[in-house]
Length: 322
Length: 294
Image 1: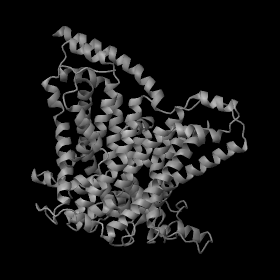
Image 2: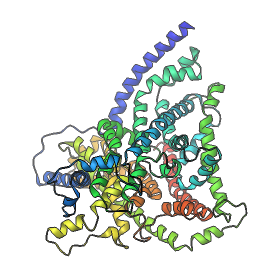
Image 3: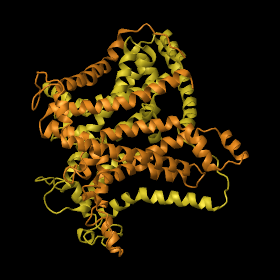
Image 4: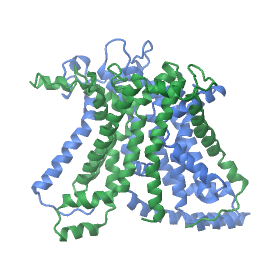
């Protein structure tokens, strides 16, 4: 028994080295690396290229800029109709208000409740959907139980199905087991809707590993779960990182599912944000609204700016489903 | 590499149980349920009678549904075309060995990390007729400038195009750019020797080679079009009036607001069939190509 464990560890080491090499190669393939730059003369064509890119960059940055400056201006300044002007009286009051006292109808508790609701939804949903996706991908790549291929094909079609065609029956089913409008309910829903992409992601990753690795582990006497936990999972860090980025971003940004399934006690931040801004009572506080919008976008934006190329890899692998 | 089936242990079957349940119950089961409800006279609660296609007949004589179909068609064509063109141009221009490439890519893609709700709300503010861009134009002395599309019945749907194109064209850029970087350097050398201008190489040689990237981008964008809901709710709530109504929102309103699940189910089956009609052929072509090894 001890011998087997040692052997399995060795296989794992060899595999990890192989995987690192593969990953280095994959990095070059999946991420666009710039071609070596030569010193190019400032021809009119070059200037045109830069003019286009700078103009485009300004267009893409404009909403972020407007959002930021609006969120730190007092309302008197906003009423002047100077959308693009920098604030003359800088204030963080709108941010404080957005976080803890902005109103949705009669309740004025800000968006902080939504923030924590989103955290409570995102963390377990991400973990659960990745765990199931990884096991699915592993079983599909190496064990291939009868019928699994067909299930997988149907699951992939599921990625394209408009949610609307599933929503009502899901509401009824969840209601019948008392999970509708509850935290476990919305977590289950996110796990179901995340399953196609997560399964695909892990299946593709494991399918690219050398089969010899798996065979050697089998000969060493590894069973289904032991090979998964001791050999495959330790090699899966890169794909798990991509999966975490995809799921956290996707679930955090979800609106429709949270609106229907989470229930009023667990509304995610996107739904609360929309309620705050599109509420019809009282004067519209644009500075508070923009601060709340930034607060809602901070998590996915931070993840994007920190993870950079990993985020792009997620897009590339998510896009495979097309 | 052909993998032979292992002696599959019981554990493997247990492991895929969640997937099997999800596929059978959550995907197939719910779709069958919806299809069944769509041929019944259900209103607030599902009825077990059979009324043939009468829900579909009612659906296609419903003004609001027809309007939402028209809107989503206009929206879809403009959104997909704009995203593909802008994304392709950005990728090509970035591919010209420019400075600060990483920074530019980051700028073009960051909106994609934001939710459609946030996107809709930001653009709702920018396009606000009292204090937004229109007012800025007035302040600049261009006093009869008109840019109040978001409150204009005929133009509201275009504001949703603007906002979502801003959000999603970076995605197309990222896909196209990795396609461009996969183009063989030899092609560029050959073209240079033959004296073919760069823009012609892009148009006539490189673009056709990007076929797979384009079809991937198309499918992703198409799915976004069918699902468009969040951005509309956040930006215009389907208004002014019902001017920017879309099918996904129509279905949600009839499911939960108007409690007419028969009609809503018929509408979602129409939506489902549309998606399958567009996506399935693309899938088929791609698999065939892969099978032929082309």
